[in-house]
Length: 628
Image (cartoon, rainbow, N blue to C red):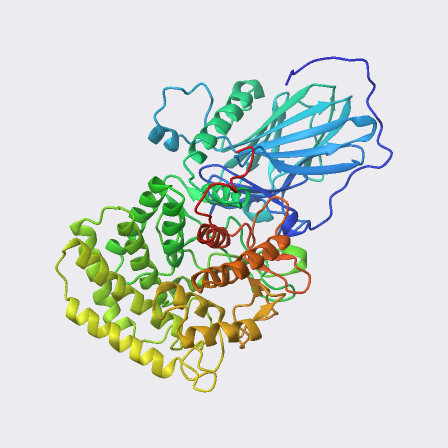
């Protein structure tokens, strides 16, 4: 990447200029991530980025309002013949290649730096404490000269605050006068301001590279050379590949599992080890509805999926750090909340912003009003995570055991109450079957952990509670006519999450109630033989949502447990036809158009995929992908 190689080729004048659509499809976005935040990028345009953390205010948010929201785009002046987007192998570093006339190419490398390559003596724990509030972009040209356009339009507080600018020979500083925060762009160019947006045109010669750095909360524009962008690129590649080498999956789905675990790595907030559900807010679960939520939080119910997936992949360190983040919360809080911030704090109150919304689908929400709901399944998820952690060699200390005992003591009363369910309904509380089953799981796993480790506990009482829960569920939670589990007591409605009940051992996969439940889900909730909706009953929200992707992976796992592996493989193969070229997974898929819906990329979908792939992993290595 020579910075200044000259040649005699003239710069091509654009016959047709390139322009971006107001709202690219969700699935056409790539994500880059570091250790504290992530960005969504479409063909060289960053249209979502919060800094310094996942849950900070966004200053690029044009994905939620293409007029008010900010962005940072780099693109060729002329219309490209083709655009290819990919990742550098075994990294989350993005390559966007614009193919132009006369066999010329312009490539953008986008990444959030982790460390510099010359930090050879920094021990691993120190690396994770290194804070670089930066995003790097490298523009390279080959095959001839290219005229490159830059548009830099930061908008603070999700697009609602316009900045003031200071421009120098080294770049631009955008100021937010309301809180004295800044966003700095360092990179050589001649910048001008028009309509509150910074523009530049660069004439980049053949085999030349240009470097750009976004730096949060910096107040002096230094030359871009001082940021040592190439060092950070090579250091980041080395770091993530070394980490990735610990993954022990060897099946024929390696490329998808690899991408899933890299996405999950980028959704981990390193200072605490917590993993967010998604890096975005308010991407709609239903077009034309109001199912738009802020997912930049850590859901406790996801803990069992996180622990199981990480342990199965050999990522014991990440599993342990996350587990003890979880422990801090259950030791501190008398009443558990469904989700917390990345720092383990209560989520902020839900607020609606004056923004258009993705594809004119408001509301745009920050914060999440479900934070104070009672969701009983959270307790079972925590105990399932503890059970898996202990089963795989993790240390359950006496102090931790006392915390679990206190948790189960609270659950002795709570399990009898109605709640909001796993789906966080905003209707009146009900007695949801899955919530009751997860309460059963909590006591069951507590008994198993304690007996294995020889800890003292009121086991006889826990056994009695277990038996009482099961009797009640089998009496009130099974439809007499169809013989299937139902969503809630007193109803006949079916629910996709009931697929998980036989996977957890409440009943076996061959139990008639499990078989009848799966048959009803296949008949009433399934589309295209694999896409599954959560439920069909009214929930007082607008819009007809898509299929919830986790349920498809639970269904595949059920087929494996029911000794229907051939069907499971066929279903997974079909499901992968709906997945975008980058193998990034959404929360939901529209059952008619197969478009992505919901916040993206979705950690729970990637966790579900990993666990389904591990269930299908061959016992030999003959399917190990070439080139790995």
